[in-house]
Image (tube, rainbow, N blue to C red; front, side, top):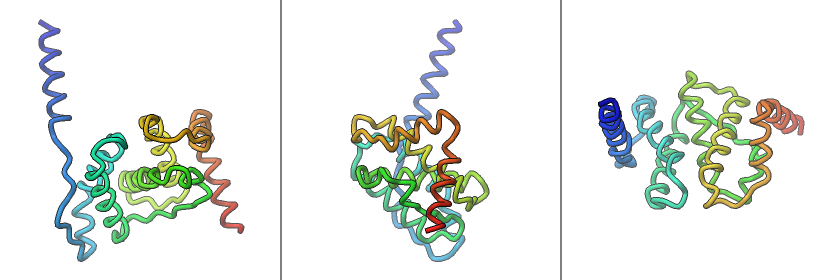
Length: 172
């Protein structure tokens, strides 16, 4: 009996989670601050979809979702990201990782009272990249820079590394 109940719960959960297909917001108009805030649930949904969907799937939808996310980010007054190229050496080899990085930063900011802490935003972006890289190894080139970040995360030294890179950039 317990196995039957567990199976029914699992089937319902699976249908609920995977039965709902993500739709890229259409006919979006951002005219004032409130418009951006009103779309935050769709932004979070877009981020979750982008990060959960393999690079090899639904290329057109991914392009549209990327465009929506960037359009929202470039106009919202509440979230800002300072992209530091010293932290993103892998972008030259794998430019498709820029959006997951940005998505991780946005998600962190939204979940942390619109944080503008550059260190923590970049840390969240890198953590997102590492997870995305792990999940998309079949679609991405091997990248020693991302694997170094993975090791820094395991050692609990990622934030320290980012702090040093940002400080170095500010000195130059």
